[in-house]
Image (cartoon, rainbow, N blue to C red; front, side):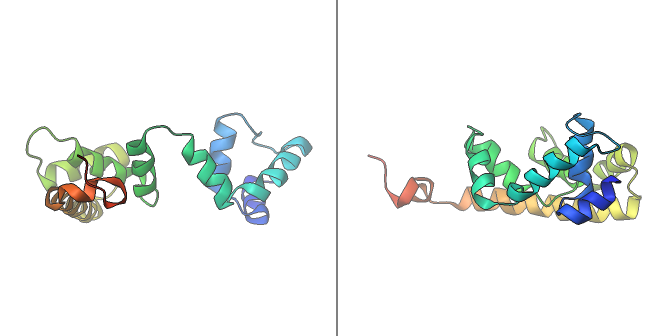
Length: 145
């Protein structure tokens, strides 16, 4: 059975199965053992309790938040977002769009729209962070003494 058919049948994405294959958890041509494993995994794969417990194991709160914040982004979008978040100096939209074109092969007109969207997202996040009151940083709204 192909990865595509298994993905459809058991509720996985093709990409998730390709990751399992790349990490040599399952074979490219699925064996009976792989099917048993995937069948069992499919029972807990999307369970919120399971996901929550696995996220809890990531000790860094910043890393967990980043993971959740970027979950819906594509690889080129994450690249752009991180370029703006980690920029030491000034970045031009055209320059970053050229990088996205070069590294990911995204057409320049699509890359420019993506850069604009991600740049606005970064600016909004930075302005929200700057406008927070000190009491908002404390858990449960408690002021530190």
